[in-house]
Image (cartoon, rainbow over all chains, first blue to last red; front, side, top):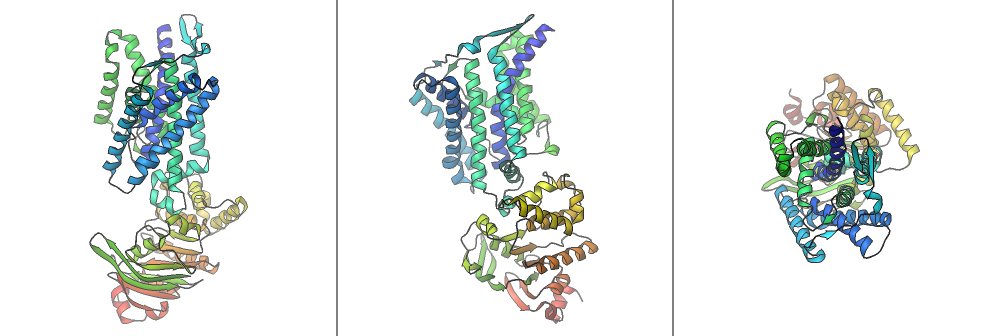
Length: 295
Length: 234
């Protein structure tokens, strides 16, 4: 039982990070029917912005966190503005290729600007604390990542379901042409969608770097792909699906490693196996088409 | 209120509108009738800016709006009820109505317009929290009209509002169109149900293969042999 609870905590923690990143994929897909392959790189930028904020500009952690999230949101809006918006009327494959291009560009720009040498991410002492409940040990970063993720996910749900902007997003994702007839500002709403998705990816990237304290320009690839798997698993285009998919994937990975340690080298392969199975048997994802509430 | 001058539209190699001219005077009901593929919907969609024209001009309130974006046209009171209703099926009835009022901020006015819409369509009020996709076809059409009214249209473009409705509902929808018109909204109506449309129209244009072949007052056209043969099936 203890082992199970221990794994549960670890799984929730990893899953919450996947959930944060998966939201960005699913929101952008919901609105533009685009898999934003550059999303993993946005995640990477979040971690680097925090790193430089603390190390070079000597900002306090909390301020650096806020600045990094804002800068990453702006980076996301800029990719949309310059790499995707000009292709809005082009065939869908063009914009997909553009996304792959942005991904490569950001990775390599990262290598040039930040250098390819991994940097160690000094986490504040508060995140090294261990909570001990009997035989279960939960580090404060595990705990913090769950709590912080949940706060941001609630904030997201509030925006999407309780604000006018959220209503515009949901309208655009169902029928962009009719949304235009309602005088919805489509470009602006898409921009905001990218900003929100990127901000959540930045939160994910920062928590990731606090958890695995080493950052490098290609760090977004694997978490990005896994969050994409989480989004597909939950039903791409569906926000709740992305959250649930993230938690399931995180949990599955941790349980695999926890109960079959000899297979732990295959944890990435395992995630892709899940993707293949989902695509074969339930390509609409768990929260399938019928409860579709896409953003 | 609306002046369409020498409007041409091409879809790829297809010449869908071949230089049409017509005008919609303020406070009137004008109708475009014609068979499938005559170019009626294309005309409306071009007026809203959803389709690009290849030549010609569109004047609305004496302004050349030919190059305006759809959103700017809607903001200025040019509102369309699109063909096939196009309600947002996964949003609630209330959210659909809110979207109609999306461009507006005066909560008090929005509220009083909502009450007007509930008066016109009592059934919508009973179903506010229901997803719009679960409504019947007639209710969806009412929602589409109600949603358009929530944007305070000055010129309301309606694309086949009677399509797929039972005869009783068709009658109801046309009565409501007349009522909206009496409240001061100018209406440009597209219909295949030529009889009903000509009956309420002040003036009508008949379209055939991208051109206007005939025009006249609604009730006059009802008596014309060509119209009777082609559209009224006598």
